[in-house]
Amino acid sequence: MGRRIATSPTEFTILLFVVLALVHIAIPVRAQIVLISGWMTQPVTLDGQITTAKEWSDAIPADLALRNTPGTTISARIWIKNDLKWIYTLVAVKWPAKDADRYDYCQIVIYYSSPRKIGTMLDVSGVRGDGWTYDRYGIEGGDWRDDNEMSPPGQVDVRGGASYNGTHYLFEFGKPLNTGDRYDVVLVPGQTYADVRLRFRDNSDPNAPDYNSWPTLRLAPIPPLIDTARPEHGAISGVSQVDFKASVSGHLSKITLFIVEKEHNMEFNVKTGMYEASLTLADGTYKWRMSVLDVLGNTTSIPERSLTVDTTRPAVTIRSPSSGEVVRKSEVLVSWEALDATSGIAKVEVKIDTSDWTDATGKTSYVATWLVEGNHEVRVRVTDKAGNVDEKVVTFTFVPPPWYVTYWYVPGILVAAVVGIAAIRSRRGPRKLATKPTEIKHFKVVRPPRPPRREELLKELEELYRSRKITETSYRRLKKKYETETD
Image (cartoon, rainbow, N blue to C red):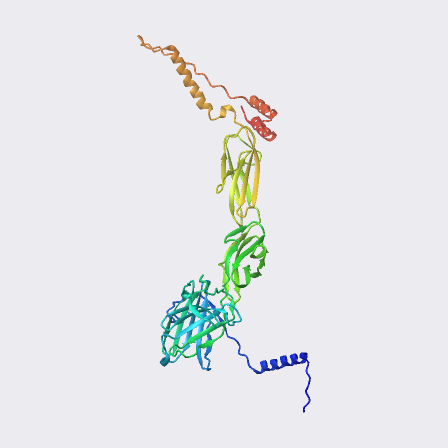
């Protein structure tokens, strides 16, 4: 007899793994096909036809070989696309005209979990050759029923159509990603579903096996969308450091800021939930935009925006009154000139002494009235559109003119004369009729009081200066003026 070789359990286990590895290498494994859903940009008419040349131009076609149990193969081409709400499918199945039947159908089966096994729940969507749609719920290895036949009943949410052109079936159907029906799987953009079954059924022979393919389905991710971007278009910054921020939704790979012909990567801030970049810019006006790159290589941008940086104060100059000027009227004209080369003037304000600020935006002058005798202060404040402020102040003195040169002197004398004459006549009583020619009386003309002499003016000026009602500068100027004038 031959000698028996004793083998330990450990050696047997190692030998078994080696044999399995060799078998795995010897038997070729077919790579699983991945159906990549395109992002929907073209509308779909669910009529079982390629309605327009662009209708399915946004989908990525994939060629599949559908096999039945005996090993017979038929060819099919499939297009799938989705947006935020719907998924659409177009399947072209090559099929001989002699076997075409309006009850032939095509379905897509998506399993709730992976890997699939007996008892795994599944969701079925499809359409028949006559346009009848399928929306079913089932169990792998068990019963499949239309959603509206379940208890409690659901609803049929699939829409579609089908046609046959002599060589190919065209099965076209669509379904919401989230129908709200308890019997439908909820599909999410950007997600991959490992266990998917594409099924074609030849219903002309009830005993004929199904033609199947088992691809993986990857839904198109949500294209990135820039929800908000700051600064706003036309914004003006009063500081040189400008913060750029963006709120972006969707499956993105990179967000870039373009400004001054340079690119700047924007980083995600966990605290704010926004993509941010901070740049230091010199005064001036800039054009900028943001661009987002998604995981599929598509880009989304916002329209170009403008930004003005202005860190320089505006310039204001008070033209009148001049500093230290003595005015003789109780109203004074305040005039100024304001300039800002970058952002422009936004507001102009004027203030006399302790009064409130008066808005004079858009003006270059202001008349201050009802001035009291003495020293006064006028301020002009200018604010540019970036919030920078400049303010200037001048002082002046108001000295009332002598009484005899006031505007009311001559009218006052005339009024006094009229009143006096009226009073004299009223004392004489009513006028009597003359019996003889009226005697002409000669009236003596009384001259008005003479103007004060130079000595009197100088004395009055000296009293004003000693009582501190005028400044020393004003005192010296007026004294010189009176001394040079002739009586």
